[in-house]
Length: 576
Ligand code: UDP
Picture 1: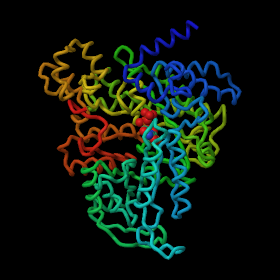
Picture 2 (picture 1 turned 45 degrees about the vertical axis):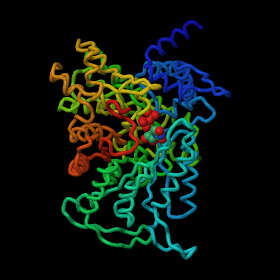
Picture 3 (picture 1 turned 60 degrees about the horizontal axis):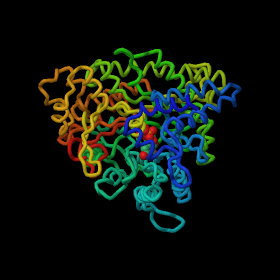
Picture 4 (picture 1 turned 135 degrees about the horizontal axis):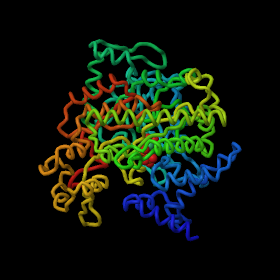
């Protein structure tokens, strides 16, 4: 009716052209002939209905919940991860973005995980694997009297399979591959991406221990251990291995590090198992066969009259936790093991996007103490409200089954979810919500894009909004900065404004790490962050960043030097 149409048109007016195009290309349902069969408002309604319906299973009315869910999505204040937007209320019904699969030292296990991976990718999820349990290259294989080909050879099969599946054409297949630093094949793993044809569909992380990091700082050595026999194969100088990691990361962007001991120290389910891997972008450490569904609050929309709207942030957090907990029940899992393990711990990951846009609206530079303090204040608040809501849900609906075996049982009377918070990259969500991604600073203030032979300059929407509000917007200025995407060489712009709009490559590398650490303090899963470095960055810069991340108790670290990969998603200036 009229009311519905009116609602639809207000949603359309909130969406940016890019957001609308993205929804049309990949999210809106299609009919059998491949024609788009829903409007953005109908998408949010479909999702809200499918997720709210769960309430009635617990004896509550789903109606008000559905309207709350609908409203926060339609207002672009909260969005669940892409598979939920794409698949909720459809036959496929797979709603999670993040999975970890086991890889044990047998062909049977390896090829089972390969098959499981294919099903997960097909449904829009990403997968992480630890290959640390595979026997090293050259190790005997009893049944064939041959020798093993090692983790790397198997990883290339996972990589190829990912290419072939392409996640049903709607998403790129994404994988995390982890190898422990004490695996005998570690050097081959570290250097794998020096060959440009290798492992395009993998992010690589070396799983490092406190012992290793200690040996690096003490210039000591450490043992490589064959996981099959438990025997020491040889000893290496930790510093040499670390140097190789840094060199390769400098050259190619891989590998990053996962700080395994920190991850497991903070994992509330350590009585149940040891975490060896994360999902593809590093934000969710998981046990084998666990999945996690994510959602992100758009912080840019939590600002009212130049200040943070705490009441609104509280309500959005509470609704977000409720939403994500429902997703666990509404989900159709790609494998029975995954359904079972996921429901055992009921992990969810509520996080944020639009953090840099929020800071810009508050007039706070990203790279200063106030920026970091704001990060801590906001995330601490979200964490506290998330936990409260999860406790309430636990009291109403029951705690997750493993609650009494978890470290949470000593602090809380009940809890519905073993983990509640995550900071995701929000690569697609932030385009739909028309804001900055995750907790990243703006990448550039202007982009140029080649649209059917015409070069168009696009201006970052938050930058444009604030430039207009503060009266320094002019088409001449935009022309001026079109090739650099930066305000730093515009002398007529006040110093403070220039700092507020410092872009990723202009921000001190250290500051990126400190921001990640600030969020990690109040996040029980992990934080996706890329430390973006200018092309001129050195290997020593990488050393500083990787070491600092460890010192500040991050769970992992990844850094990327501009222009070090052949294919790059974001480009500055006139090359795009
Ligand atoms: N992911 C994936 N393929 C993609 C993008 C993302 O499998 O092309 C998975 C991956 O596990 C990643 C997670 O989704 O860590 C979250 O990524 P992001 O926040 O960028 O996804 P969005 O929800 O914005 O689509």
